[in-house]
Length: 349
View 1: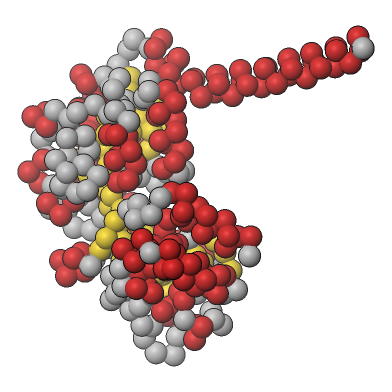
View 2: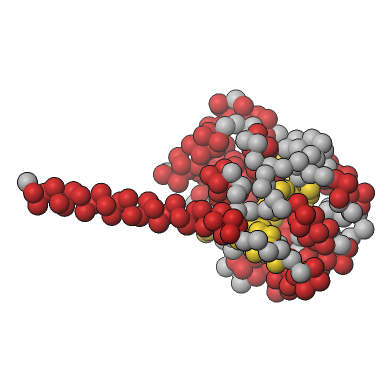
């Protein structure tokens, strides 16, 4: 009995230890933020958004130190900011639907637009959208269009500008990359089947979308959102669903790669800049205004092949007003649980 009790105590002690380690890792930015008294700001952003050389130039010019933390998923950023209340971070780069969640959870600081020098130069199409109708909390930074990357070497004729490329068995001999994100996959399949994602509100449409994705599964060589450019450029896949920026980076290395915005319409995503409730406002606006300088923005646009939010900048991913009018956001037409259920059923099939 004594030995059994000791074994139990050891196991409990080990469990408590590892919980403490995990919690300390979660709150390291908070603790570090609290002990810093110098001119330092803390930024949480996506990879391939901010060039370290630009950050270094800002530090030298302003005397402000910028500490960068990276996240790979919107869900990761939301969970971290919600768990800490934003402590440990000043500036974050949430995607559109994440902005809406953070506003609902009261995690963001209202913007002082009088301190933003570039507001009049922002593309009006990126303002006043569903996730922040008055842009009280978010500034559009980079935006992107979802579409299809194709390697034209493998097509006898010009590929159709259609989601057919992803779902029609006429192209089943061409290896394909598909997104591994439930929301993206379900909404794209609904757009293909019904011409509108609103059809998903009908349970029968949800089942039809699931069946379509199951039929597509045999064609998919890889489910991923992080290797689109590499997979296309290396010709491991001939067709790939992804953002125009990923496809354009592939095009730089392989001129046969082309980006298609389907005629049926597609989706866009806006990555915004937002401030946490604990942002050091005396410092953050200097950094934000620096990022929106036309020459700094243009550098990032050409480095990472993203679309610029500034009217004065050109960008690589061409999108006419007619194309833009056919774009929709990846919104919650159905609940997150229903998105995930369709995806889990697909993976289990």
